[in-house]
Image (cartoon, rainbow over all chains, first blue to last red; front, side):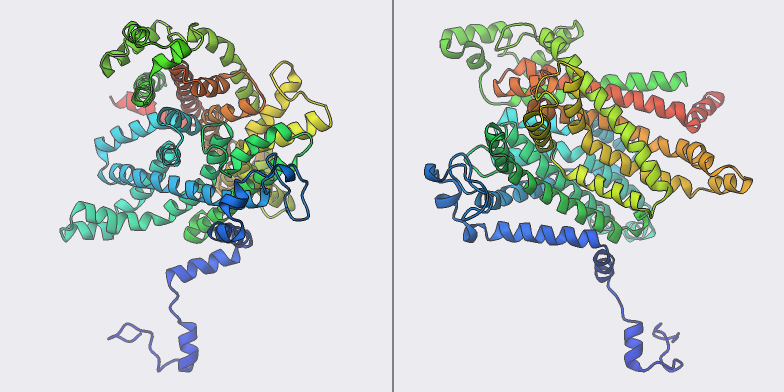
Length: 307
Length: 314
């Protein structure tokens, strides 16, 4: 080692400068994580499925127009079997199922992601303050979280939607709030593991303000478990959005929400099972993709957890 | 140990009160008028005012809340806005159905996932382990109501083997309990697998092997016993989540349980019924977590020892 710069000493090695650069190339943390993630075949499959869904959602209007294809009733073409002009067939009102599923992707992804963001917002405040402040405050806050966790999340979501109506914003809030409890626990335990690190102590010693320490030093270092949990939570919430719509409390017809489509297809299940199978597969694959990516991220971000 | 049990039981009181408060506030804040539900087409301003004063709907929030609490302590859950009958009657019909469904489902989940998880952990790189991991991934990604409809399509409509609705015979329980337990089977077998792998790495396992204990005994007595502890906790919290899942499952299979009661009363805006259903489910969850904690303390000698020491000191 060179005493002045701290760099490995070049002169004593037999490597050429090029070889040296290659061998000691500084890999960023992000690059390292991507390398681990990339080697996980399932995670990459999940990422590819996810990208397909995102692209379909982005270009939904180019693939099929909302007003003239997705929600327009066309009695002449009702209940067509898959094949021909309509890849997945048409439903009881003559609407193309493939086009509806693509537009449904927008709703599911939007609601799934936004509800988790809502949960993250509240859970970060609750979990970070409880974990960082600790003591009696922690006891009281976590007791309240325990109480919230006693109401099954689906039941809480239904109660909120039932009370305030089933607008899209209310569904996002309902699903978000019903996942706050479990998310807060994850964030709190992550904060607890970082709170007593030397760099946090150092920040405190140089007199930084508590909010700054919490956001700039503590939470930033808790990102790994939070991202993993959030990804897995999106999968759950995508399923919950469609479950709510299936029960008749979420997005209502004629909107092409997947759960809503399945509820409508129930009556035609015996003769036309494709009406129900296609949107179900869409829910399954989107949740599956998020689960695969979440698992891959867990392995990449937190190698300790990998068995 | 007694002190631990008493402490845990007493801790349930604030939890139940808190749940009641949350649910009551959500439903109190909801816009809309109860009198339109009760009177329906015969709604008049005078009639509505009379009902409001009779039910005390104009009273301040805390007056209403404590009145509800006082009645609840006497076992009175109020009367349904729609039928006018006491809610408790409806609950008495619905609750056993949900209880049967959840009990069968959790048993099924445990019976399937613990052997699978254990076997997958003993041979972590085997084909069996890979298949069980894939099965778990599919299980947690499949929406229950859709799987339920697929099963109905196959076994009721096409093959005619199982009834599609109700909870009349033991045959009718099969499909709903499979649907309800599927995702929990997946989660439980994953948990079992990872905690078993962790237990297998412990020093006492190496010691047991070094002593010459039979391989089967090492895995099934030494490792399994320790690996079961985290799984027990999970069973408790899953039972609670299953009550939420039951809402969907009961709708798919038209089972007259608590979930169905809740959905129907939400759709008809029957507030006392909703309140009762949510409260009872939450109390069940709290009770289940109490049982889990006690079971944990019973199985984990460290907790027992901790309380014994505290008593010796203080």
